[in-house]
Image (cartoon, rainbow, N blue to C red):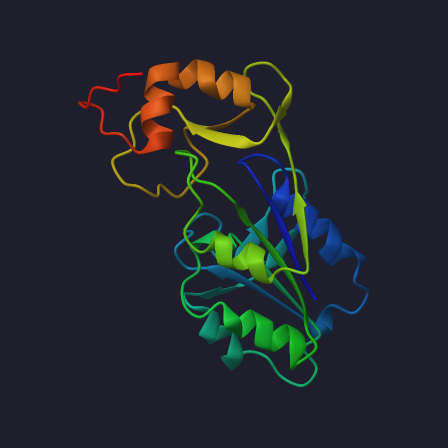
Length: 195
């Protein structure tokens, strides 16, 4: 079984994973991983919603997991899975052939509302997907999008700073209708749109 918790920034994806972790009685059968690319809280899966932190193993590729599993491994958790690289089918192998339950947490979309790196593949192989909504920073409605306040130099900026959750209406307001149209339709900013 593969279950993925996904949604925008500040929605509680990691908190949902920690809640699931806490319900498992024998922790000796669990392995927890986090991509080394996420330099926040190195060696820990941590949520603002819990005092509990979970020790995690830093890895770069899905294939790295194979070096850590053994016959007693029954459950795997991977936080910030959108930052992982490598062969996603390793997860399918572990789930089907090794009969390991896998829980994943990660952003589904970037702040530019594009699928986040490897997440389309993760969502495709998941047996269950739980989309967790945040509270819109501007109006309090259900937020399903992440917005970045400021100018990002790099395409993927790891961290919480500058990111806010927004509902569709507030996202359109903040982006401005013409800029949003250009962004979503892939039109360069200096190109005339016409009707």
